[in-house]
Image 1 (cartoon, rainbow over the protein chains, first blue to last red):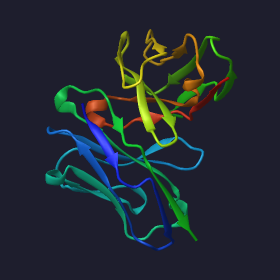
Image 2: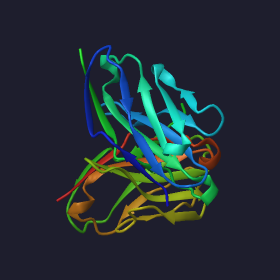
Image 3: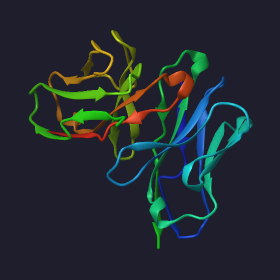
Image 4: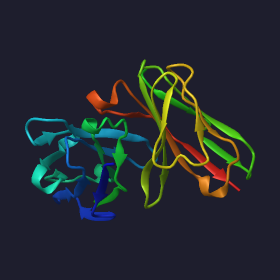
Length: 115
Length: 114
């Protein structure tokens, strides 16, 4: 079964700082990778996803993520964060090659952006 | 408006009193799933359903039941709730999880079991 590790539990940044959140997955076959965001008091929303092709994917609100197959990683980046980016971010993986109908989430990284 | 609707949004109950959390989606999605969210543990999948009458266990199914008699509805049943089931529950749906990967989430149901 697939699993996901997110390295940082809580990240605190000042506005305009650059962001990188780590995500590693464990599954040797083909995977679909996702980042979801949960703003305070809200439900999860899709930020971006990778299925195949260009390993650098761009999502909403200026976020991007890079899939590095050799490192089993899918790190989330943003060049300059804003206060409105304060939220919890979840990496998720699905392994369709294994016939998996599960979307497995990491434990999440809470981002606090200080004005 | 496309949405996933959960009820109730908030519930306080006592140990052993059966309860059902309803979930309904209006997007004609095949795939539906229940997750629980706990601090420091992220989202953990309870049950999922690939289509009507097809359900399977997720990672933490103990103490829960589900059914999928209609495409739009996927209720979560706690036959005999216990305090360790106090949590925030999310229902989610997807047109076809494997091909699109995108889950649409409900607003969440916060359950407290005393």
